[in-house]
Amino acid sequence: MEEDYKNIKIAEKRAGISLIIYVILSIFKLIVGYLFKSKALIADGINNSTDIIASISIIIGLKISRKPVDYNHAYGHLRAETISSLIASIIMIAVSFEVIYNGIHSIIFLNKKAPDILSAFVAILCALVIYIVYIYNMKIAVKVKSSALKASAKDNFSDAIVSLGTAVGIIASQFGLPWIDPLAAIVVGLIILKTGFDIFKETSYDLTDGFDKKKLIGVVSKIKKVSGVHKVKDIKARVHGNNILLDITIYVNPNLTVKESHKITEEIETMLNSEFKIRYAIVHVEPD
Image (cartoon, rainbow, N blue to C red; front, side, top):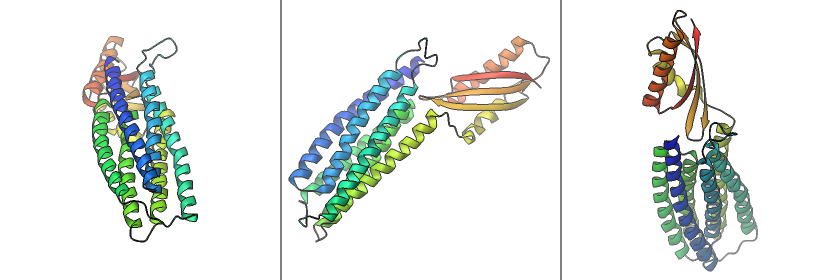
């Protein structure tokens, strides 16, 4: 459990850094978009402002998930991290509709004046910054197994694509196609919507104890190789924060003593930890 809290603290620190970066980028894009009259860049800035709210949500969730086990939370508060990702996804979905609506409104009431080309260079620069943040966040998320930081990293990647799309729209508008800029804003909204929906789908799946049993094929294969295990009758899994919780039922020789059966369960638990980094498993023994 101590290792879990250490990993969460690392993820929390990364989320804090991302928050600072998004505050700077959002303010920068909104000011430049307003001065250079770029709907797409303003939409991109609004997108980054949702990332600020999402990052705050994730930081709060990570802080709560670091709370130790108490009377009412025997498994700790690790699922707060997943809940924070869910809240962040809902915020993203809500804002995406606003961005799409504004883009459609701008096309209907089109301003034929193209935005300043400098706003395109701003978008490209921001895309580069966000992509670097994405690479680092995803690397840390995989290392510490943080679902919240992984969700944030996915958002980082979509933001980088959004900024590139924004630049393309602004550049295209310079060639007598001013409707491309608000159209790019609509595309920005659609990308935000898809990213938010993907994160919502994944986190709600985890929170409802969904788990793909195909991922357990290798685990079952290894359990069967443990000395004394005749057969794996059943195995269930669910995600709790950055951990996988297993419930396993195995068949063993009915003539074994309680002590001998218990030794087999300990060997399974040791194997799961060393081979799959699964530290929480309940092994139920039945006579074959």
